[in-house]
Amino acid sequence: MYLSKFLRRVALVISILVSLTGHTVSAQTPPDVPDAPASGNPPKISQPKSQHDQAAEDLKREEHQRILGIVPDFNMMDNAKAPPLSPGQKFHLFWKSTTDPYAFFVAGFVAGYGQANNSNPGYGQGAAGYFKRYGAAYTDAFDGNLWGNAILPVWWREDPRYFRKGTGSTGRRVLHAALSTVWCRRDNGTWGPNYANVTGNMIGGAISNLYYPKEDRGPELVFGNALTVTAEGAIGAQLVEFWPDIVRHYRNKKSKQASAQSPSSDAESKQ
Image (tube, rainbow, N blue to C red):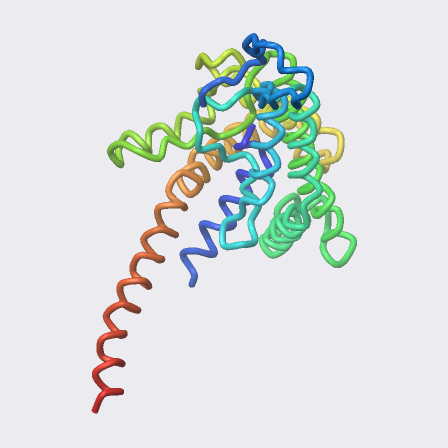
């Protein structure tokens, strides 16, 4: 989902960086319009957008969403009643997320961290060990995204995006974000268990047995990775939920500072 393995790792990386520094639209039949005079031009009638067209517009806008102007936030949707994505649009969102330059940066960060801590020692050290860890990190993210954001959401008709609450008490919003890893909106507008995300994490963990060192394979890898990614998703969702509020607070603070400095500047110029 929005909280696929890649985006969870993205949110986790951003948490570290920060610590350091809709209405469903349907096709409608246009109303009857009386015939125009033979000498006149027929009146133009604006056609309502189909669900697919509106979803395409939403998706195009989402592709420009980034945290700190760098980290992709393509899966975040503010409108809880937005029309669902088509199967092709879900795969497009998956591909956009996994091929963004930041996805490769995250894989490099995870590989470097693993190298420094000698995780999965079967990979060894040196350049060879690093690139093995890099490949594993990127493949983990790719698999999680493929199954959790595309294949299973299409099959089970679940929406892979994160629908931001944006209003209400802080406690309710925190809970909403945390539960998004196990609770999601469906294509028909209802909400229910996030089967795609949970199952996608399990499938990704199972596939990782193909390329992790022999001593690290087995059920513990599958379930351990799945639980870790789910926990990362619950944490990362908090950043996605509250980031617009952080930006708004910062802008308001800067605006107030600018307003306070302006009268002082005017007074000095008059002296």
